[in-house]
Length: 165
Length: 416
Image: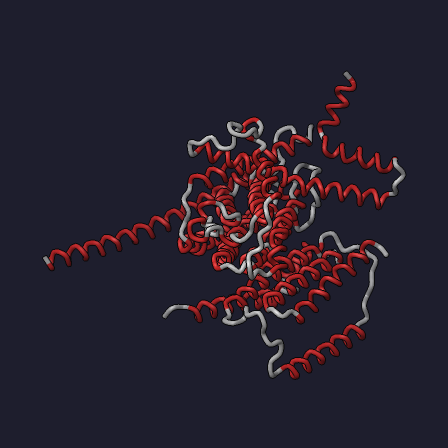
């Protein structure tokens, strides 16, 4: 096994183990922390794929922003920090059904997709290409802008909801 | 004579040469290449990780000494127990004391996050040093996302404060953690926008490239950006005017109130290490990093310039930290959201337009000095506009206060 393979299995194990820890954790706060560890494992996989920008973005957005947001939401919700919460509610069978269906679809996709393999290294200017593609009208300029409009809408909506009248 | 010149040539790029010497030694011992590279990388990682620790040991002593002198005290010294000349060994004595203290665990803590938090704090601040350029060839790893990597780690470290604050099972710690996240997330925005301006002007996220672009240090091209970055990073490292996370008088110590012994020491260490990292970052982004006279002839001088610039920023940090009183939390948040963020946004837009305009108006390319001059003029313009708006707002506020006071006085006269 090469060093890269060892690292791949290490980060994969971190991501998967943390995901299992998240769904089995008894405290919601612990579940959130497990989730952050899973994000960290995924960031490691991005590094192995020679996509350092995505790895840093994963740390920045998922751990720094979304993780903090989720923990905040948990802490500010009444009763969420109790020691023993019931792990399932009345809709557990429906959620399980959906999860199983998603698993089948994903497994089918992974099975069907012709995975192209290459031994060539990632291009050195991949970061520049990513930036250019995001602002290129032929590329992803429109989805990129629409996404930012969506975020602005969310911001304005949040301000409108909490504003004192 | 010849040996002297050879010694000087060795000294001129001492750290790189020592590295080459160790590599030669390992190859001579019969090791093959992937392993030699691995060992060299491990040694490099150790050196980079130990550097901030060494700096911090000195910095804590220097901070105490400077603070004492500014407040008319002596500070650490050898008058009672011997602590070296000028008390320079005081930090070591404190570290040993902390290591020998009893490990107190309060009741009702969340054991694993509680014990993990101090480790992660130090880990996150050491990790940022991996991409810091110490010299022309001295850098842990010259990633093509360099500056973004540093920002990502400082942002991910926010979770650790929440972990420490929540798992301590203490209301002051929890309030401290909430405050820390409100403050750090808020001040991350102007810091990020300032860094974005720098990235736009230099055209790269790579640290060595940012340093390489600064024939004229960016402080003299983008003073407003430097000012925003400086204030935002003061808040990011929790220095005195923005020191609301610890606020001894209200929160006792903030999110790490329940920690004692070396765990407390780790938080203390992490804080000083973050300040050092921010000083080094300012030196790299705005003061030209390792650039300075005679660096081509003797690359080791680059490291000296870098450390001098970092030291200068740390000294400034200490002066502000020691002389300023603490803001209130509403003042601090208002200062960020009503002043720094709009200023940073306007600055980003204007500099972006001007920077693009320079390349459009001068298709044949433009000299560094002209470019710097145009950017500086733009910055002066932004500064004057900000000053004008602030002065107008202040005048309006004053008028309102006067009319209010006049109305009060009028009522009093009527009732008398």
